[in-house]
Image 1 (cartoon, rainbow, N blue to C red):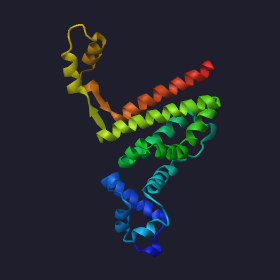
Image 2 (cartoon, one colour):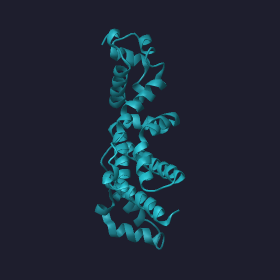
Image 3 (cartoon, rainbow, N blue to C red):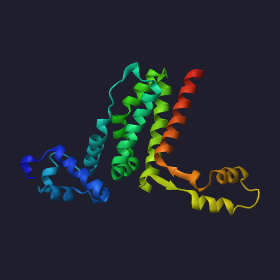
Image 4 (cartoon, rainbow, N blue to C red):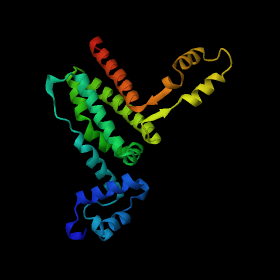
Length: 219
């Protein structure tokens, strides 16, 4: 690239490519400089260390999640779901970065500050108090983070629970966990196949319905 064309954006774009292709451990300032064909010291004029690079990557990936305000044309529940889907999709698009972000408290803070406005806006439109908004957003973000960790560790669209779970349930002593045995037996192998998209939507629906019920009760 040459140092005369070096910029913060160019550094971060290259860093993201390394992380996406090879993982966080492959990203060092020396490796980044070699890929950009510049002297390592020149990077420090733009980003002082690897932590700053990672914070910049979080900003690069998640800053684009600021969704346009649809106003009252879209129910607040759907606005909330759209915000959650957008955040999950961003995490899923960069699984190696997602694992780093979700295991680093400072990185999580960087990301959350960037992405929460659509969540706050939707819940405010739903009539929640400031405390309720704060608690609800924390719960939803925690759900997305937990889901993303599971999804990223599997790296596939589905997760087949059936063979192992069926065997374990069938091996239980008679009368042990009868409800579990009945439900698993009725679902069978096909019913136990887990699809991450469906699982995410189910969880999101439960959370949103719970928040809406709380609003109706005036909690």
